[in-house]
Image (cartoon, rainbow, N blue to C red; front, side):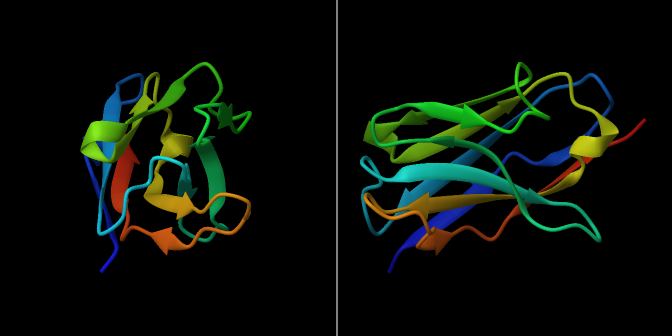
Length: 118
């Protein structure tokens, strides 16, 4: 059975940092595009960042220069380093895995809450 499990969320003050982790099991995601999405209350889920099978990264304009995604293949994990956090970054963050040659995630994590507040 395939699982993605996010961790690292929590409460942080504006300007602070958090590092989210997503651990995969049941399948190796080394050639998958791994993405981070977020959904704030009353808003649609949006793509925050992704890293392709070739390790090319892409970011939403709202997080460019503040967030960095990376992967560690031996651990089957991906990460989202979030710096200079703002209240608008408050959301549930989800990890998703998209198989090669497709553009729709096949697997999703359960999400982790990130709250940015003083």
